[in-house]
Length: 269
Image 1 (cartoon, rainbow, N blue to C red):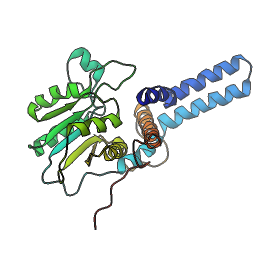
Image 2: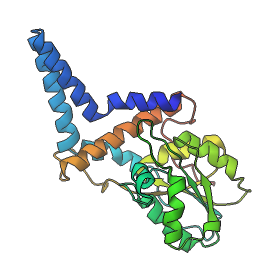
Image 3: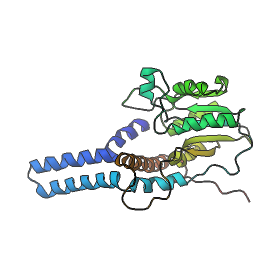
Image 4: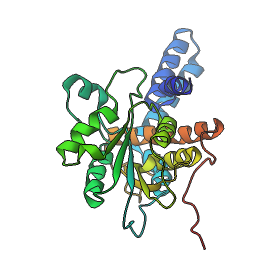
């Protein structure tokens, strides 16, 4: 139920949907002669669109999320397992065409292929089922073996978790598949902006992980002002950032994490 409610709620909360709703309100109120309300709704829709697409708002919203975790320094000498979260493959296209098309978060799987070569003894757990509510597609855990084996990763190293629909289920179902022994090192690979929520959920599930963020959307040096990126990328960043902050709040309220904004744990003295 949580997954369905969150998917439906996000339909109305994302910037483009808000713009469309406000335009509809503006037209409807104009039809009834409510001029001030119509102008207010129209002006607000224009403001939302401008801020989302033509300013650095998206980068500023994403920045704190992407900066929350860094790759470990020094890099572990040995790694027992690598967990990669789904979301980097085009599920609907791959289901129709049978390939392994990557989307804008496909860096997750590129990085896993690199890590697989760096740590040849590590198991690779791919966590990701069909999470879309309104669009049929193939889960990443079903597609990824075609990609990774083509890149030279042995099939017997892969552990597939193809039931999860969201980050919470990623953690819960992954925990059931692996039982890390004390002292083992498991890397968690996901987009940098998504790492705080992912780490919080995996901690709650009792699966200790070492964050390995990838797929950065910002340079980290953006300041308030007009966007230097194109409007579509700026809009995408705003959408991703707002969604992730809402996700952090929703997961904390639902008890899926123990912290609102999970961060690195203090080093032992």
